[in-house]
Image 1: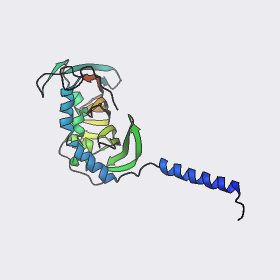
Image 2 (image 1 turned 90 degrees about the horizontal axis):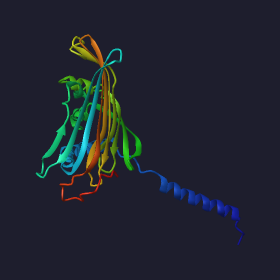
Image 3 (image 1 turned 180 degrees about the horizontal axis):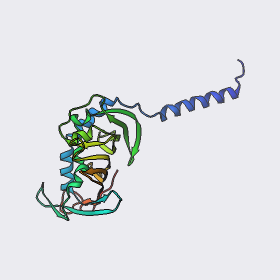
Image 4 (image 1 turned 90 degrees about the vertical axis):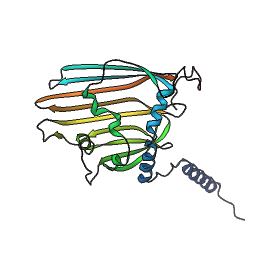
Length: 262
């Protein structure tokens, strides 16, 4: 029997080991974008119940700061709203101590304007570009642009959404929208520009998961640059949820357990 060159054996073994490690390290194949959107739509139907349960289980402080500036960048108005969510003994009800009421300038930034349903999704074309961890959990990354086939426009909100582009991150395990960055791709006129126009608009938010599986939005902010009749103004809004902890009156859960994201 011929002697086998030990160098050849070593190289062969290293090649086998490298192949094995490469196979183990290979990331899982990305799902079809249609599958991601279908699961996202299905989960969005549970969002209302998720939000209600979060308010019933957790005590937290919600704060919003809205600033309005003129064309020179000078501050015309600053509004601060703070609200404490304190779950009551009666299921389905909460006690809240609120500050000043939200004014009409905060309306374009409501998260409810971006409800992920089939009507909302059909307004965009999606491209699945990869995955990355968000708060330690794998998330799928999708780029969005206005749909080539223009969807119907029934109001100003539809006209704005139809010109939105950006990027969204979807929790891969639970199909939850966990992060988003949106921006307006072109100016939107109000009644042919006679009443006003929105020159630019951007919105971003992120969500976190509590240790017992509920999702909430700790940060959301938006910026609007527009004209109302002949007056140009910019509006900036920043909203956050802080001091999140399990409610002490909720006896089904440990009274001193504080929120811990996963």
